[in-house]
Length: 289
Ligand code: BEZ
Ligand code: FE
Image (cartoon, rainbow, N blue to C red):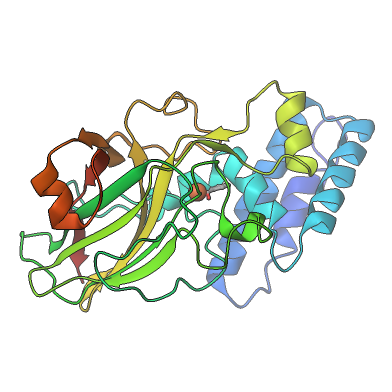
């Protein structure tokens, strides 16, 4: 190990040099950056041995909390803002395209294919709602046959996989195919804000930092069409109290939609719902590859 003028060994350079035989240049770049930033963090904060041990215990518990259906490491990345940062770095498609946001941990089962106009709320879980819009290319051309994978929590803020005793599989989920003019529409209940899981290490982290665990009410979409880059996104319910303090930092202004109250009987007939209902409109715009 080399030593500086004060006799302190420069472990950082030494650790970076240990990567010299790495074949994959990108792996070498990523590990070099990781070592340099981790070491700079330890120096800057003068990390104590006890703090290092506590961090190791925390990361160990995070790994031990992961199961087939739970990913506590992704949740950790979410609450640290890293998931959203990676999403932003990789999801830049120009202002004319729908902005992306985090996938989240609840896209874990396949959404059932449903006809346009179908109701994804299988249990009558909240206020009736129509979601409609079009899937378009960046130049405004409709994308017939575009596929929309939709999932959301019920009116009490739970996904089907969290409450298998009260929600049938596929509740709040649907796989829809846009019509010949790129249009889609489906029925659901107005989603609620909900807390991310807090019974693991990430919950402890939120409590230790006096942070609330809530996400503002939203509906998830993955939209895809031939020759276009798929987008993973949400629409958020305008007026939600957590829009400005999402626990996972995933709100983008362009994704907030009014869920407008409708009392018009003809509009209700068009969608086959009783009045009153709420209506959210969203056009989803994909980037041509
Ligand atoms: C979600 O929206 O489903 C979600 C996203 C990140 C963390 C937890 C939940
Ligand atoms: Fe969600």
